Every structure is written in C-alpha cells, then in structure tokens.
Image (cartoon, rainbow, N blue to C red; front, side, top):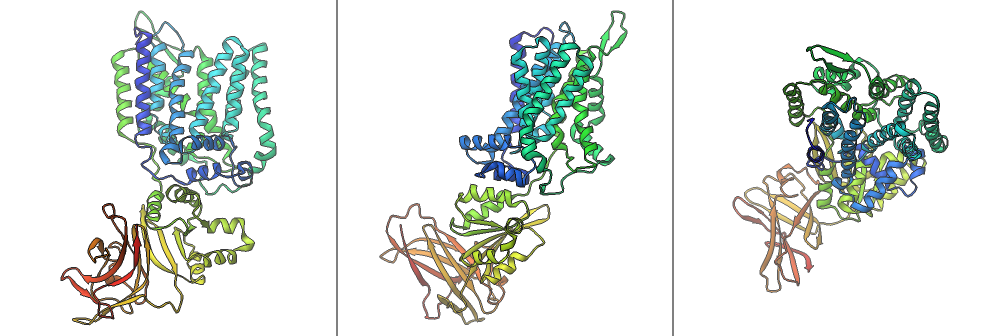
Amino acid sequence: MLHLSRNQRLFLLVLILLLGAAVRIVHLGDQSLWLDEGIAYWNQKQPDLIAELATKDVHPPLYFAALNVWIRLTGITPEAMRLSSALLSLISVALVARLAWMLRRDPKLDEAVAIPVMAALLLALFDPEISLAQDVRMYALRTLEALTAIYFYILWLRGQRPLHAVLMVTALVLLLHTHLIGAFMLPVIGLHALLFLRGRVRVGAWALIIGAFALFMPWFLTYGIHQRLNDTGIFAALPSNWTTIVEIGFKYFSQMWALMIGLFVFGLVRLEYLPDGAVRVRWRPFAQSFLLFVWAALVPVATFIANFFYDFLSPRRILLISPAIALLTARGLANFKQVPARYFLVGVIVIYSLSVVDDYYPKAPWDDVGDNLARYATVDELVLMEIYRDDFTFDYYVDYDMGMTMPRESLRRWREDRAAEYPDGLIAQLTAAPTVWLVHWSPDDSAFRFLRQSGHVPTAKMTVDHIGNALDLWRFDRFLADEAPLMTYARTAPIADTLHLRRAEIAPERVDLWWSAPATPSQDYTTSVFLLDASGALVAQHDAYPFENQRPTTGWSPDEIVYDPHPLMLSGVPAGTYQVGVQVYTWFDNVRSPTVEGADWFIVGTLTR
C-alpha cells in the first residue's frame, strides 16, 4: 500500500464506504421497530419534549430534537428514520480513517496508508456498529460525536489553534447532551492530557474539558440529576459479572475473539524489523496507544463498576468505543509487514464479517400487527393497547399505517399517568366507541373485563407469532341486547343449520358482515358478497369462508359473533349505484342456504361509486 497514489487511496476508501453503506442500508427496513425505537419516536413527537424527558426518560434532549427535524424532512417510514443513524455511522467510518492517518506512527512506513484503510474497513464491518446504525436511537450519533471530539483534540494538540479548541468543546458538549455515558470521554482526554502534556498545553486541555462540562451543567442540574429517578421502562441492564464480560467480549470481538483480541492487544505496540532480520518491539509513541486504549477500556470498566450502584450496563450503551477498537486492531494488523500474511488476515476478517452475524436482536413484529390493523380498521375506531412499553412502538405503527388522528389508548399509561381516573374513565371512553381494536401481549386480562363492562363482544382475532409468543389483535364490537338479526339463512336437509346475519356495513371497497349461529354449524359455509347493477347483472363478487377463510363455520361457538370482511375489486366497475347482496352456500356442492323468506340471497343495501 506504500506506493498507492492519493487518488488510489481515496478510491479504496470510497469502496469501503460503499461496502459499509451496503451492509447498513440494504436490510434497513426488514425488521419492525422495537421498544427503544418506539420510545425515540414517541419522545420526538411530544409537544413539550423537555417536560417529557424530565419526567419520563433518562436521556438528554439533543438526539430527539434532531430526530424531529430529520422526520420533518424525510417522513416517518422505518427506512427514512433509520437512515439517519446509517448515515451518521458512515461518517464515522470516513472520519476514523482520517484520525488513523493523523495518529500515524511513522509516515515513512506503509502503515501510514494501511492503518487508515484497515481501520475504516474494520469499523465498516463491525457488527455491533452495523446493528446500531439500523436503529432509530442516539448511538450512531454518540459514536460520531466521541470520534469527532478525539479528532479535534488531536488537531488542537498540533497547534493549539482556537478553532480546533472550539470544535473539540462543541463535540463534547453535543456528546453530553446526546447520551450521559458520553461523559466518560472527558476522563479519557483528561488522563491523556495529565500524563503526556506539559505546562500550558496541559492546563489548556483541562480548561477545555472543564469548559465542556460546565456547558452541560445547566441541563444536568435542572433536569438530568432528577432523571435518575425516572423509570427506565424495562430491567434491561446486565449484571456486573463474568458472564456479562464474556457476552460483551463475543459481541465486540466476534466468535473469532482470540484473533481479534490478539490483534487489538498487538496494536498497542509497533514491531520494528531490523536489517539483520531481528524484530524489535517498540512502545513509542506510547501517548497515542494510551489514548486509544483508555478510550476502549475506561468506558466499559467504569460502566461495569458503576453498574453495581445504578443499573445501566448493556453492550449498546457503551459502544462509543468502537472507533478505538477498530484503530487498535488495524494497528495490530499493520504489524504484519509480510504482505501475504496481512492480506490473509484481512481476508479472513472480511469473509467472516460478511458471512456471520454476531450481534442480532430479533425484534417483535409489530409491523405485521400494524398491517393487520390497517387491513380492517377505519381511522375513527379506537385502538386499545395492553402490551407494556411496546405501546410506544405500536403507537408509531398506528401513526404510520392509519394516521396520527386515529384514537388510541394505552392501559399502562392510564395506570401510570391517570391512576385516579382508572378504570372508570377508561371504561367511559370505551363505552363511547362502537368498535375497539385491542392489541394484547400481557398476562394482565383487565382489558377484556373492561370491554365486557362497556358492552363489547369479541368478533375477530389475529395473531402474529414472535418466537413462540402470541401478539394478538382483537376486534371488539358493541351489540345491543335487543338488536335483531338483519336476516337468517337456514338449511333443513340433510342437516339443519342456521346462520344469522347480525349486521352489515358497506364501505367504498369493502362490505363488513357479522354472523352468529345458535348452534355450531355442521358444515363449512361460504359467505358471498356481490354487486348487482340496475339491470340485475353481476358486476363484482367476493366469496370466502368467514373472515377471509380464517373463521370457518364449523369452528364457531354457539351465539358467538364473527366478523366477516369482504373486499371488493372495483377497478373496472363504472360509476353508479349498485345493490349489495349476501348469500350463503356450500362450495363443494354449490347448494345455497336460502333466507327464511325463501330467497337465494338478501340485499343489505346499496353502494354508490
């Protein structure tokens, strides 16, 4: 790599950036948003962000305010929101190469080119960093801010220019207002300044650190110090024990941990190859290695210790160390002066990184539940959620699939925020809603009891599986005790079966039916909805077992009310008014069940288009 021109090196870094973009963006929307992303979306849309964070969250406001601006520009699709993290992560990949070049140990050696390229490649393919680059969370921003702070710190050391000092302080202040664990970067820089700087430069470095901390104090003293009392939402912190150390080690250094840790440690020194073939281990320049090592080690060690007193240890929360890991590992690779050996190791790392995923979090498929809601609900119907804090996530999918005006309520938020009105106020609101969609994933069955009290009965249920867990979406409709059926369909031979058409509602491109039977039907009946024009000609039709084949009649309980939607394909149907008919038959013999009036079908109303 020593003989590469500047343009060739730039071309190589562009290829690495394209590779990093591919692994971050190609599958950006494959998984549903999860709890933390739902909270981020919820926070950014609050009219008073500061009040929400001060009373409900544990994070500073910068990321959520920035996310709100980003969403206004790009929209709320999962891909659009996650793209912000992906782009920030790619900027870190580019910046780590620049920082590696600035920290070159000997500009005459090929490592002055090799280390920046390999550091960028390692960070581009770093699984935990890729995972965070696909989250609507502040972690990619935090990593970039930490990297930027170190970058301008090094620039400032070279000439003590005021601009670099201002930019370093700005990066640190932004970091502190993004995530509190960013505060560990202050002692990282402070220790380096204390041990390796002298005189005015040391005093100046500490003045910059103190200045950055002082600029964070208004938030911390006004809100941050009290946020520690807020509910973190879930017991997500890992215990400070050996098992956690092993888990984090596998996440950060992959299943090839022996190789990757070896290269990381190897990066603390520089091998000098002498003309006689001997190899000398050199620690100098030790100041650079110390800075990178403290950056990589102090954050997890300090967090591990602090976790004994305040639970907040998790791999993603301490991952602002990823650039330091990439830099030291790249330095370790650069110690292999034999080109075949170095290329072999780089090839192994690249192939492994592209073929194995070491950091993957299976997210609950709330997007599929939201799709079910969007398929059958209307925007004026009420959504009720009993899914603990995943209500933040499903609130997003209600906005995304149905619009921000659709009414929704969370039982958790009622219990936490309106305890004095719970459950009477909630039941009163349910009573005013003809239809309620209940999203349920909880051992608490209070919602079902409240819906019975408000006069609702379950008419449909859709279940999405999440690793053996049922994410249920129920439809509840209110029927009056004296509400007579619209029509009854009956067959007397060979076995007597009766189906009551309880209700019918006609929408522009769908007809919803509700059925019941006094006894479980002996056969699976097909229900049919069709349109007739003014001459009586058939212009559209939809036939299926009830609820689009999900609720065959032989599975009904006596007097159970079953929701049965029938979508109509009307793209080729001319404008006009059409009669909407409903008939019941058995598909295997095409025998109709007549109405009690002896007709083959019943006209439930008209549809105008």
